[in-house]
Image 1 (cartoon, rainbow, N blue to C red):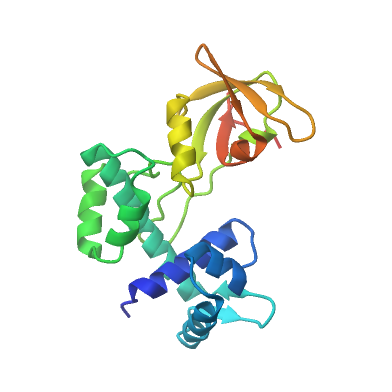
Image 2 (image 1 turned 30 degrees about the horizontal axis):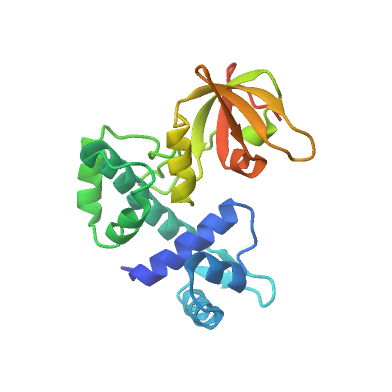
Length: 224
């Protein structure tokens, strides 16, 4: 069954909340989508009736297997489109999210697979997030938040949160992108700023910013 753009947005948002280990409550879904809680309540009932999620009052919702597969299909289109816009139109990684959001609902499965082949069947989007496979599987990557990396430790950036365009622009100005190698020089106590070395430049990031950046250590092992 073909799903509406609104339904795809809802189940993708719920998937993101589950992936971030946040309970998908009506309030959180409304905040992520920028809609009224009453609208979320009505849509949740509809999605439950369609078998896309299970709803337990006062405990939030969970996607069913069918709902998760639909969310991953939408996520696949979104991430392929983001990479396409970056690779072919030279758009910045901070510019592509909203356009991919609009295009993901309109593009056919046949065309998205042609684009995927054209791009060389990539595994990751421009922000380092894994692209789900056609059969609804998603790669698990062993990575560590930069906020957890010990001092004097060299590492490489493999994923950056794409929720904030301004944050992505700041990273670009600081010379930080996917694949950037850096070393943690100093971590201030009590969740203070983290000083890193990127090439010959020293960059200071807040701990919250470091939580949005995932790395692999130089030996490829997790810090935790």
